[in-house]
Length: 95
Image (cartoon, rainbow, N blue to C red):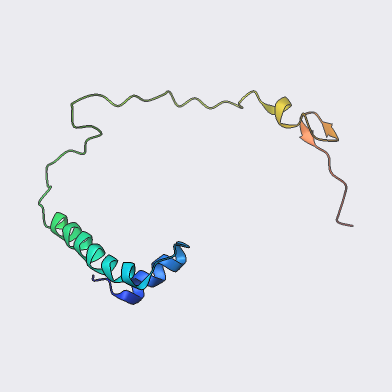
């Protein structure tokens, strides 16, 4: 994939970044260089290589996956004008 001036301007507009014509022309070359490097990485054979989370061998810290209600129901409805048993009470809007 290659980037042209129209793509750079479109991406800049989508990102809401003001880009001058001179900067856009410079970015075309820079982005094509980056994409070329990514294409080189795709050519590397990584079969048999384990994914790693760090360059030093270490176990990833994981928290226990416990399901709880959060014990925050009363705090959530504390500022509501009308509640009942930790539920918001709202006026009926459908007949």
